[in-house]
Length: 249
Image (tube, rainbow, N blue to C red):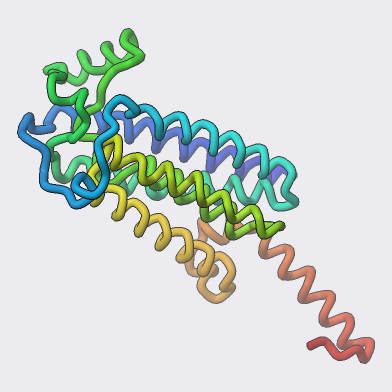
């Protein structure tokens, strides 16, 4: 129990720290975002603009997130699901910080066309405190919303107990598409976020469930201590059955 609590607290602190780091990089990226016309984007040609619904994805994020947490509370592996979600989200957030700082390009959001970013980081921080509706421009590559939505979709499908749980991908996919339709992101931001999340998810689970690989990654081995204990118990059970003359296939 103490080890479980320690791992949960560690992952939570890592997540909070990465979110703080991302808030700083978003500020820096916003201050450098060029005030020039939007870049050509296939998604903008295919999807009509719904500027007036630019908060739609945030609302879906809150709703789908609450449903996902509620589902985890009643899943036998709920703690493992939430811990893995938080850790992978942390990894992808840190990666996002590097791409936000690397290149700044024009934000397609309508609110960014007339918005003038504060001249200093301090002024920006003050504005975010006193103006809840503050605008972040240049917060683009890659899409943090897409990372969040995709992780939730993978969580539902990977740990599904009932087949209908996989239908959760429908509102999640709608949320991802809405990011382009409301001009919150370019299509490229969404695609890169989606591809990277899929890659990181399956790579992590492959390492975590492969004992020979897991030994090389101490942090993952520590985080997956409950999985290691489960494997040891199952292995001990098989050895006991074999010693009693029972064939185990």
